[in-house]
Length: 182
Length: 423
Image 1 (cartoon, each protein chain N blue to C red):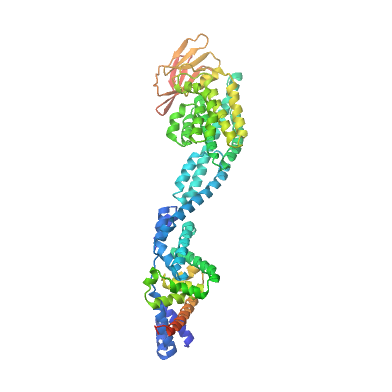
Image 2 (cartoon, rainbow over the protein chains, first blue to last red):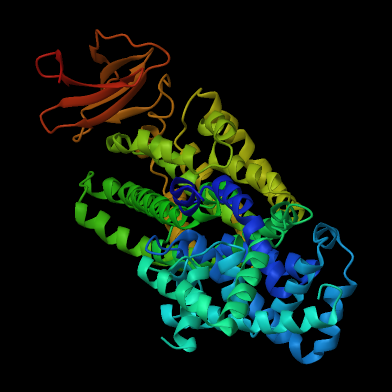
């Protein structure tokens, strides 16, 4: 949790405070970007963009919202823009390939097939469902926090999340049927 | 309860959103309905799988990676701020280039103070404007007075000052607007030339107008503040403005401007040395040395860009009128403040019966007719003290002031009864 004093200092023009603040949130920003975009390179790019945006827009943050939801709103919006732009040029197959063919640190960490399957399955969810799942499971956000981040009504958040889990469950059932894991 | 309703309970169960009774109902249904039981266990599995997804972290620090971009961004924002400056200046007129530039350098480190900085800059600009404005006005008042006093015996009217004030203010707006909105590199020396001229007029004033003594310390402070290198300039405060202007032109690295200034510079030098050596303030020293810098500044301007505006001509004219004015008695008065130990300079009484002089750091009053001293002040001052002959009253009371180590004392010499009192 980012200390309110740090945010205030950053907003009052303390550049060091602002940089410190960015360091504190960079992992959270990256994690969301990684699970929304599905690969390290895009996640790095999007997360950097998000941090720059936070750097320049820090004064537009108002205390009535939670800082972490404000940050997550910025990164999810950026990622949604990113995959909306990249979708038409990348077919679903190629997109999936990028998950499979990746050979990076994260994938080494994800040693379990399950995690890999789930990650791939998340990549197949519609963008808003995906965002809700990521915020719920990777950021441990409550319904309300997700609603605030995505600017969605609470009931919509619930229905997206429920449908997302339902879809994942269906997707993984198919996976499990055709995989070693059955 | 149907399976559809239970489905929602299952989902909310995963998010720990169930009341105790709802949970009981859910578990009760699941035990009885095999379809729901299977789905429930799969959902629980999914949820726990999602929870155990690796909490990935970036391979390297993203903040470190973006710092160069952030700095570039700061620079861009700063330039954006720069382009805003002429606007601010137009509205606040006599903005001095030096301080805001230094301030902007500091702002490079703290972007968010930018707006605060802008406010401060505007404030400073206002302060500078007020001082410069006043000074230009006073300068011209002085020029006017030289004439006026010669003919009418020295009646200073505030009306005159007010009018000149208005006149000199307006052209200087245009001048600055043009000079500073040009963001070409040449604008910098140009600006400095303006600055310098501002400073010179302040100095000329501090040297000449003895009865505006209250303005002198402030004006000098102002001159100091307006310089890029306060210590260097401070040293040079007694150096005549002509040299001053060239100094800046040289310093700014503009070859042509310094070259063009050089030849014109030489005739000034002897006078300059007279002035700075404090040997005596001749009647010509003040007007000519203060007249020259404007002329020297002009080539810079002409070669720089077409910013030669009304302000210059107005100022120049007033300076010229002063320079052309023989004004011998005025001239002698002019040197006094700047040259405390000078012997020749004096202040004649209104009816020219007496003349007050500073000799050997004390005030002496002479009869104009035969040059006989009628009063010698008992107060002997130090070399470092600044004595200013302020004014004569019609009944032959001389007022003078002494600035001794920062404290200013006012004295009156009553020639009639040969007495001196401290006010």
